[in-house]
Length: 154
Image (cartoon, rainbow, N blue to C red; front, side, top):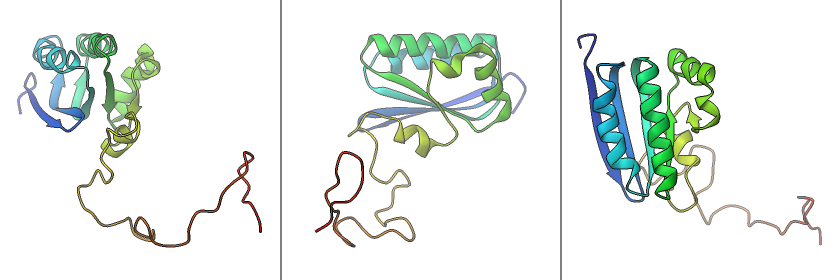
């Protein structure tokens, strides 16, 4: 991929959308990102921007994300960002954007931050429970708890 190329993929899921980017988000490619983000942010649904394959994000790209977050909030939705890359997380921290837009290291982490009922039960797509955990409805029944969080005995 050449230095100024940006690949964008949009996946609409029930209740939310995922936009995945790969390449560099700079002054030359930010308008392409902004076009996609504006359409998604105005939909009123949560949008997850997956930047895990973004090798560079400049001020223009950060501005596009901030604008999309404001637009999404104004439309009743939200914007969440995924990236484990040091460069992207550092740019968010330096600009304070990490305090305005939820920033997760993984897609599963971003999905967990969505409002209740919108995130899939198993983001990996399978129907099996995680290793070591009983399937729903199996195992020991939950005991009632006091407000302190301690189990009720008896």
